[in-house]
Image 1: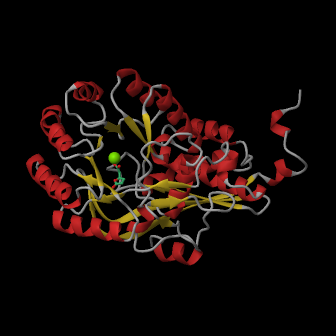
Image 2: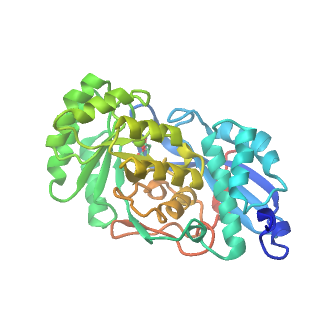
Amino acid sequence: MPDPLHAVPGNLARDLAVASITSTIVDVPTVRRHKLSNTSVTAQSYVIVQVRLANGAEGIGEAATLGGPRWSEESVEGIKATIDAYLTPALLGRRADLIETAGAQMDLAAKRNNAAKAAIETALWDAFGRTLGLPVTTLLGGAVRDRVPVLWTLASGDPVQEVEEAERKLEARLHRIFKVKIGALEPTADMARMRHLAQALEGRAELIVDANQAWDEAVSARCLPQLDEMGVRLVEQPVPAWNLPAMVRLRARPHTPPLLADECVFTVHDMLAVGAAGAADAVSLKLVKHGGLLALKRVAAVAEAAGIALYGGCLLESSVGAAAHLQAFATLRELAWGCEHFGPQILVGDLVTEPLRFEDFHVHLPAGSGIGVTLDPDKLRAHTRA
Ligand code: MUC
Ligand code: MG
């Protein structure tokens, strides 16, 4: 019986040893304020991870956050500290192709910290893919699509500005599905805002909403039928992440649009609980929540087993993080709700030599080995936190 740890040809095992891991905090301004129910950002902060192997190959990954440790518990400062002090020492000298083993080592070194782990895992995939000259999709089972429908998020809170922004996206054939961030305003004000948007875009665009846990069950029960009547296609995380029973009861009410689970599903166990309870119609898949591409695919498998549809979520990643997500999304047999990786377009500048291509209402899987995008050192330097 061959030893699987040595089942790679020639000197590959030695060449694939992780020689160094560096982490860099960057802040990239956004083209406008992005307002969620619980935070508001004018710049996106990421940790960019660069892994170098003994063979000289480099891989990159990104951990995205939204407004500090407010969307989830991780902040760029904490992510960098965890990577430098705990995850890097656990991986130095280990093989980049043994990604399950690397994941186990990282889990031993640090509990949760999923965004930090996902950024490193992405960089390992990228470095390994570049060594072989193969895209990560090939290593994950092969791509079943080379582009994904992509929506745009309206989140200024000003309905006049939001209609103008949506018109520009429609005109440019970039986006025709819009996710509206609700929950920062009073529910009645949000309902008026939604009615304005639904009327202005009727027949030309589809709307979904994301409350980021802002409502309680009573507010949700009052507003969901109104959103349904406006034609809203999907309602994301209306109630707090812990309140699965409310999601179940809301789904059972008449005129509730399909519900999308976001903050209530980080782990496979969360996904199993949502599936078993019947608490959602779809789930938003994100590397920062699940902890890597392998974990994202595991969560997707549990969702599929529970009959829950897949939605390609984001945390406003740059082209680095978006490309990593696309590598995984491209290998999912079904991705019923497309994705929301518009992040590269909301930044004043990207971090890569060739940003992702947005065309005909789709974001395209980049060609090339690894995750398919290359860090631009000048752009990285320009946005590195002093
Ligand atoms: C979220 O909760 O979905 C992603 C895009 C966006 O506008 O907000 C985020 C996070
Ligand atoms: Mg969300």
